[in-house]
Length: 259
Image 1: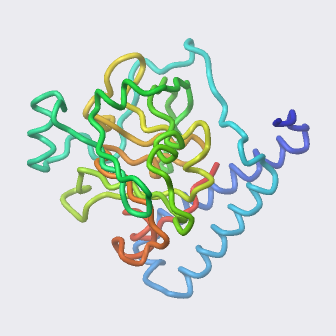
Image 2: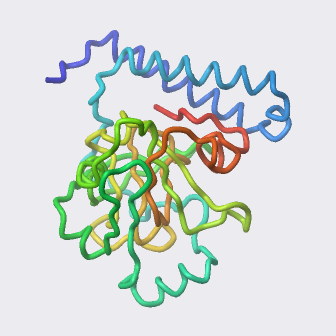
């Protein structure tokens, strides 16, 4: 059972959140230049690992991100990143209301899955009102409904050697490499980690990631992949992108984005 956080714990968590956001902003402002240096990559990676370790020391494995009331929901949920993928297959699926779209779950699993949007919506769901914190400095509160990722992983049967869950997406940010993101198993099994298909009581809009997007509420916004097409269980990132666990991580962002 989770204990009630003490005031000292809350002060420490607020300090860590501010420090993480400040560090992230500094990193993003100069990542194109700084991350060309292997030495600077080591500095950022060490800082990321330290932040992750301290946060998990102070917080319960199942500690929940704050949830809000319906009165706090923003009138319009701001979209981040790609807002209308130009992939031909995606556009064909969107034109038909995603009736032929399917989510693939494979990799290091006992039972690979292929699920339609209707099948996902027929599964037990969770609804939560949470705040999206973007590394660019803005926040927005919205209500999300979707399938708890841990339930899908249990259904697929994760093999012991799997260490990460990778989300492959339909978009290519500004026409570049395919977008992807990843979580470790602790965040993947967190009760607030959803594959969401509904925003504010309606089907997820294309600008916000339709038909399915990741919500990992203890992470910054760039971790919350949109337009998810495939979930892959892997042991390492070696064969993915540039080997750092995500589209933006391959370009200098920290892999650990906990807040």
